[in-house]
Length: 188
Image (tube, rainbow, N blue to C red):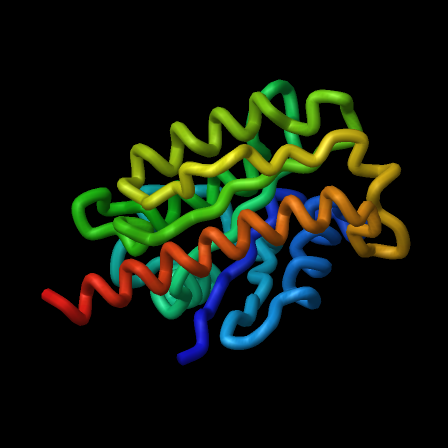
């Protein structure tokens, strides 16, 4: 059984530190896990008038990718003490309507990466609060906060071995959560 992870980066930059972390994690995964990274570049600003069955095609594609995934790996930079607007916007699109959200009960591993010493801890807190409101199953593990990220990433890859190992442990916990949830679903 393949465990399908979907990676979402809150940064659109070509040289994004967050996307570099996701690419590295994806490349380090061992079967039965695999990760697809979904770029948020084409997601328009949230507009409730456009929400529903005829939502914009990029939003429908994101919705479908999340529905097909067993779990999410979400990483954000920290902008003005919070998560990126790009990521918040994407979450707003796919979390509506709340009672039937594609995010409901979806396991989520949250990470942040920033060039600062804080590594995005305030964005981490905001992400946790936002995903709690979508009734997602946010992993309860030590926070993956990658500080001084510019010094830990080279040629588009996370090269700092202790940081990589720590992030991979969070992914391992996410995979175990997916397996546990599937085992419970079979029992009931």
